[in-house]
Image (cartoon, rainbow, N blue to C red; front, side, top):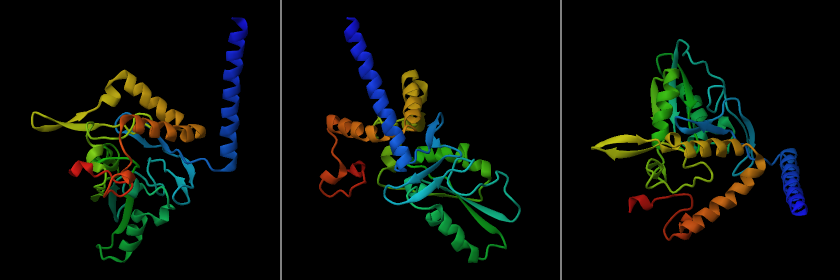
Length: 257
C-alpha cells in the first residue's frame, strides 16, 4: 500500500514537473498565445485591463489592452472638449487581435474621418470589440462600459455567421470547456426578451467559469484545451462547418434553416 502510494505521488510530481518545464519552454520561446481575457460577472468574460500578449496565429501583432479594458491607446473617461466620440461594438472582427491596432478598422476609420468636415470636432473611435461576443454581450458592454465614455455615435458591427446563435442558450453550439458558454443569453418570457444568466446564478457554473479563465492564463492549458473541445464536439455529434456541404469554414448559418 505504501509503495503504491509512493508511486502515485512520484507520478503526480513527474507530471507536474513536465508541465512546468513545458510552460517555461513555451513562454521562453515566445510562442505562447496571448490570453488577455478574464472572467466578468456581467458579460461572462472581458478583456483584462493592462494585459499584453504577442499574437502569432493568423497574423502577427503585439496586443495591448488599455486600462479601460479595450484595445487602443489610453483614453480618459471624461470626453475632452471638441471631440466627437464613436463607440464600436462587435466581436473578433472588431477586436482584430490578429493585426496591429493601427490596422484595425476602428483605427482606419479614425484616420479617414480626419478629413471630414465635422464642425471642427476631432473624431475619436473607441474599439469595444471582444472575441466571441454576441449582440447580448455587446448590449451589456454598451450599458456597463461604453456609455461611461459618453459616445456621440454607437456602431454595432453585426456578424451574421454566429451573432444570432450566440444570444440563445438553445442555439449556442460553443463548449463549456473553453469558457464560451460562460455568457448571458436571452429568451422569450411572456412575449418579451429576458436575460438568462445561469452562468452567474448557478454556483457550479460560476465556479467553472472563474476557473476556466484563470487556467487559460497558463500557456500549456491553451494547447491542452483545444483537443478537449474537439473531442467534446465529436462526442456531441456536431460537425465542423467545413464538413457540411455549402458551408464556409468559420460560419454557423444553420440557424437560418
